[in-house]
Length: 284
Length: 291
Image (cartoon, rainbow over all chains, first blue to last red; front, side, top):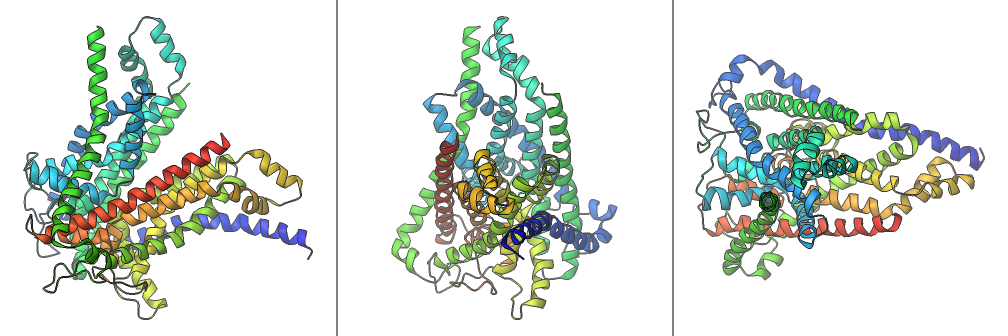
């Protein structure tokens, strides 16, 4: 075989290697998920979803953890979305070339790279201790809101950047002020993209475990939260607690709870991808 | 009207300022608590002692075992994610038609959407038992399986950032290479990848930073035994695991044990901040070269 034929063969082999490499991660994930379903699906039942935590694995359920996760999701969204969208609008529409904006820019890039466990330490000192919120829903939601803020800001900016310049100019030419242009033209036109970013950020918040553990969220809370200052548990914390126990039955519970968590995160991601595709088609 | 506009702009600017407050808050709490720590433990002992046993009767405060554990799991993860991620990037960028690429890329992103506590479960209950059949003497908790699973988690990060870098290489370079009779594979690895090397470096640096800060996979699967070792088969402890282990136990506020999590935290923060800024700096450099 001469060198040219060898090179052509290598080229053709790489085509297969490349495809395999691309699919390898997904294949492993599929194997993991298969094992997960085999372990956990049998445990999943109405009783599992509606029972309180318990020392006895067969009696334990995720009722309080699931409600805690829902609480966190709503409260985190309420805190983070207005802030994140406002900051994104400011950076993209107002402060583009100022020194303050350059500082904010570097700052957000850096914040996005801070490990989530460090946000936990911040939450522990500021929300749990200094503001005396304890390990409450509000303390956890505030911590997670700060954690997803950079994601929201970046997503808002990208969505706004995709709005054509001509739309702004037409609005300004008709006598609208800067803010009127943003409120009546730019934001509606970018709403799809912003919403996608919000949902992706929330799906990240739902799966976060480390910051919750650091601020002292417990696995055993025998009641569902009824107001933001209540102590609570959350799905990822409950899962971690069950994984850490030696008994096999708790591992089965963990698998079942993971299925529920994955349904939520994959569901949110699916909605986000659907919205993104629809929004992209609408863009002029 | 005019004041209204001003007011709105001020409100928006304040929202953007929350990010700055967050950074300031992180720096403040880490520094204040770490200062409390270093008033009781000399910095030299922190940096050179080879044992980390703050919760035992015989207390040692050497951060090295935790740093070693962190670097070990990170090294395993990068050893998985770099070759695979680069292969994927080359394949998607140089071999695949745009239509197929647009289907494959979102699929890869699924790997990044899985919560890390779930990856930890996979590492502990599936990867470790599987590896134990292949590697005799592999402990139930080990850096190897945590690192392998972490490598899968950071794979989309490496592949998508590398792909961006490859995509930024001008078409003319490829065409010159084809005109010389090179195959696609030769062009990819001898022309395009070297030309995009700084972008690929960025992807690796950011992936390392992500791996260093990752918590749940290592907390679940790598163990909680601080150990100064390069052996991936035994239990170790990472900086992040230590923080979670101590803060979720009952350590009283204001004690030296409580301060240790901030000393560990500031170490972690300095590591990731350094890596991110090296990445940021590199990225700026290579963007300037091609635009």
